[in-house]
Image (cartoon, rainbow, N blue to C red):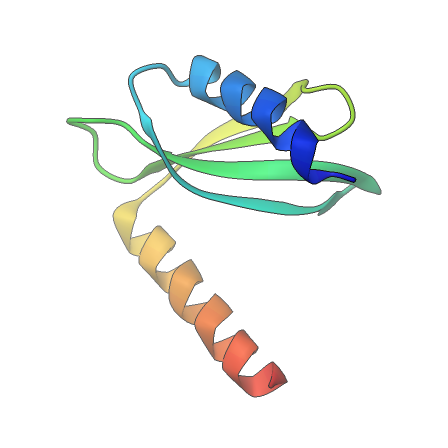
Length: 86
């Protein structure tokens, strides 16, 4: 079961970007490995910090910044794809 592992990666992601609040989380595959992707909002900073963490051992794979505009665009695309898929 993968859900119990969520505690460790989310703690790792929060530690990587301290002072932020977890906005969203996803589980997917990156380079054939299960990876959690966390969107973290930092107070006083526009946009989101995107932190990718390996599900297997909690290693931080990447940390990037996404502008507010790009975050909204991605959310709209996901909603459209989900609506078309149903």
